[in-house]
Length: 371
Image: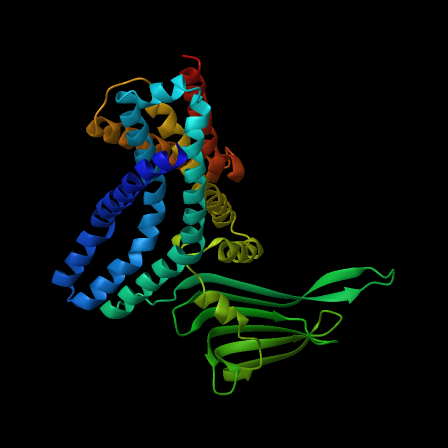
């Protein structure tokens, strides 16, 4: 029975992946790429490369939809042809029949996680980079605002405890891809002197492994917090870490980061202290964790709905799938917005659609089992 159900589910799942991926790609990327080819002179080979790089990101969203379509169409067909009735007559419970779909959906969940974590973010990021470079956009590939990078050192107190002390604080208003603008650096790394640097701009010098600062002032502060010296400069080189530049260059959109990269970005955002960006990133991280499990939810809902005695065609099953998918993503958008508005916690906002879908699936399954 398991092999028979799996052979019925697999072709429909692959059909769903192809169908949903094609539709979403056409709406999301294809028409936009064609417009850039015609209006902006984007080379065909670059457009094709970007199109291929967008595939994994779109496929991540097509896996759950294809799971729902495959389970609903398969079990509806078996129900309309009385095969499920025959299985129940042989003593096979509805729970056992649906278990096969849930098990296969769990495998799709693992595949979705791999795509969503390892393949799609890197491919989506490369697609963005490739498109920007090909169009020679005025917008730099790396544009970041409010670059905030602190460094800490550990000091032992008199009682033997260890305290975390701020050693250096690097802040820049923006990074345009080449230079940092509007810099303020507080340096407490040397004993007996604190240094405050304010500069109009700065750039990393890879040949000498130093920072070149332009048009600024250095304030030297004595241990008693009095000014020791003030130095104005047009050009000054300082040996500071390259790390702030790495932070700015590695900044990515939410769809271009995996969970580990998003967690690293969250640490930086918490140090920067922007509550809106922190909250948004917290919600996106939870949504990224929760999303692959919707494959199991859709597998349960689709198989439970399909086992209801009915005589529906593939067109009806496809229509029901679209309604369920639309309802899920609508609930996902609403709960995510409520979480960002701090009405719900990030965990609740991300997992609420899954919990609601699980409740609906279990309710339908128990109703069918009681018949």
